[in-house]
Length: 230
Image (tube, rainbow, N blue to C red; front, side):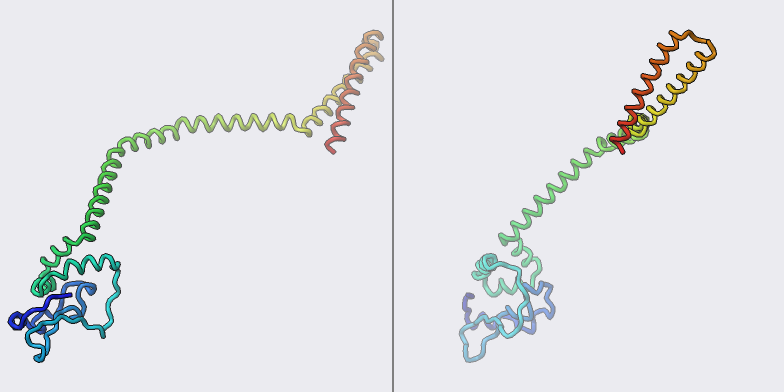
């Protein structure tokens, strides 16, 4: 994958021990000289090979094969000096990283998200006065109109309970019984008036007949109601 270089360029390359002892790159970029050029033996004079050690465990990669192929395509035409510069020069590595298409895409997405977030924040700030106004209106309604409406509701609920109580079967039976008792008392009073000659017999008969008719009608209704609810 890499081009071969002559022995003169080999002599110009620095020794591996001259490279920095500690790299600032992440393990995914460089790990324990796994991608450094290896100095060839004396029997292979006139050529310079690049080898990759396979006897060391490699760090886990989160790059898809397609993305890796794209990065390799950017690196394969670079000279050894350029590759060494990428490993030793932070600025050069940073510029190369920014030139990768995947990084450009991620940076564009990040910038778009940042713009959208800022726009939403500005819109929320613009709506803050309206929110405060609505909050104050809700507080006023809760302390004034709501209190009056709640009081009116409680009054209507009380009236409703009284109406339901007045038309309940128990209440109707009680009212019928009271009406029967009242009619019975009026009949007794009218009877005493007749005995004391305080009323004419003709008037007594007419009133007494009316009272007893009312009494028996109420008694029959009371009996039927008790039978149906019993």
